[in-house]
Length: 79
Image 1: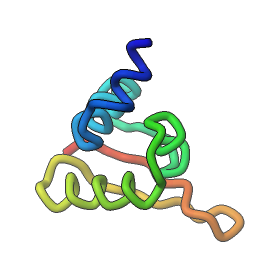
Image 2: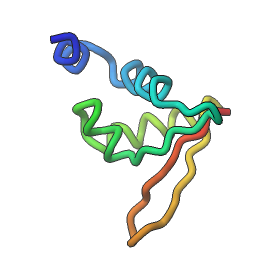
Image 3: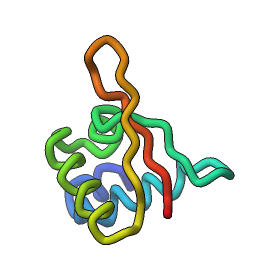
Image 4: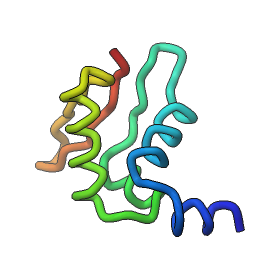
């Protein structure tokens, strides 16, 4: 029930930040694609991508992209 309430009532930016913090490695990296984050949050991938770009613009993280079979399977690194 808590997850349903979070998806229904939480702001995407807050939910995304919390998700990233929970999955961050000791090295400050999160190795999840935008699609995987979107599925976890129950929101469209485009929304996650836009929000991550905004976080990067603010200097809160740095997006990294690995190319694999033409898809971007990006990681997130905190600054």
